[in-house]
Length: 176
Image (cartoon, rainbow, N blue to C red; front, side, top):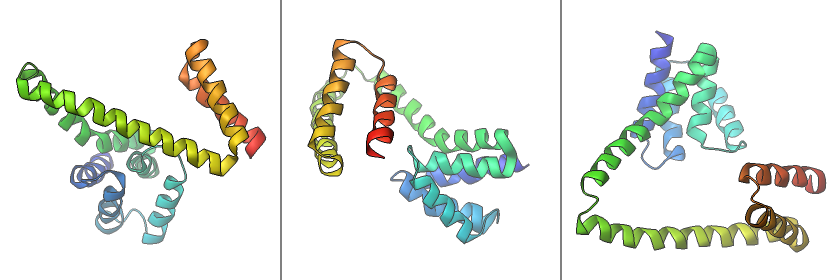
């Protein structure tokens, strides 16, 4: 029964949490503090604070912790699945529609508009990341990490995961 409750708590919060993780936080609190009373408000707020300090989406981190606390490893697995299941359903439905109408002029026009928009958004994000790192760690470290990353990724073909890991180690050793 506990696994079904873990699933429901996370599924309901994530299916109704339009806007991503931040919108899910109060809905999940209603489920785990108000409805099931697994945590106090204080415990939940500490969980959210800790989750915000870790990389990755907040909703899945909360789901994993809540599930583990209530049902161990299986509970954690159920919680994470329930938190991504609403998105999975919607993506499959959207993919079905997209494949059905992929040759229509409207979808082709939409694709032509979306691609450059995403490119601009990624460019702006890259610009922001670069200048934030410039102000946070200085121009020397920023240029060194940028050039080393470019060289390793483009010239040597190193897996991006290793480049990120290397940057983390560099930051821990030289910036920590």
